[in-house]
Image (cartoon, rainbow, N blue to C red; front, side, top):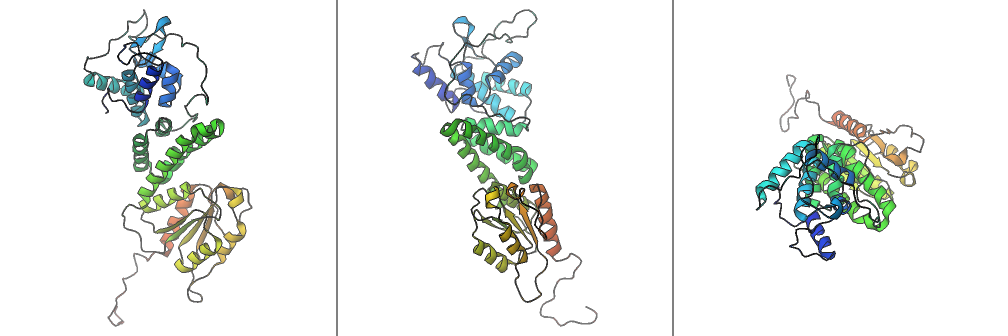
Length: 377
């Protein structure tokens, strides 16, 4: 856990904002309001007030009118609370751990608890939030709906531009859920929320989406290229349709295949038709997955060409699975002879079976080279 006096990320931002307000850095009354803290941490003001009310995670100073004023040390405590809850730790346990860590690292000992009124637990009193004018772009929190705790923590870390925390959450999700489930249940909802926020707030939110996308790709590619023992079978060919630039879901499939030891070749984004057909002919793959995010890039004619491609000596080609994957295909009629799995999990299951069908059978005796055949084997 980071030292409570470290001035990084939201802590440094809070101190700078307080100094811009004209107060000296050593003034114990220096602090910023709850709305500003919420924007820095990527949570809603309601969440912060709830943590204060339920767990005593509140500011050590209040301004005139009992208005909350959060010091950098207070925000460091909230930041640690965000980190712990992002990793699935229950809020009550996270609050105890964050407070204990702050007490251990504080030169002045534990922060004093505010007196409680009758019927309230210690440090549970709440005061009305002062009125303030909304800043351009509104709240920095991303509306996610009902999602896993890891997804909510990922979104908060991305809003804080906390790259190390984003990377840590993604590593944990991939390890715990596998790449495909991590994509479906953690990465994709956070990216969609970032995209919606970007569309609503314009360039003020581009940095969040870009940071998150980069780290998601890094996590998936790390899993996809990890050294594993692949099955002996022709590889599965993964390619995005011509003009298609969105490949993160395809990277999730590649990572999922690597985890299961399924050989693959990734061609990536916007593969030209000739290059795609040449790769199919040269590899003779166990299966081909054609990804299209949008209807405009889903090309049924090219998909049929891939499905009818041939390679090797006459009659040597085995039936190869060709699957159209991605939401871009959903508005097209199903293509005869081609698979159209609706989810990445279903696509991974299909290619798993396709590779198994082309792999040497465990019951087959190994080829004996250099020795003549005999009736007795």
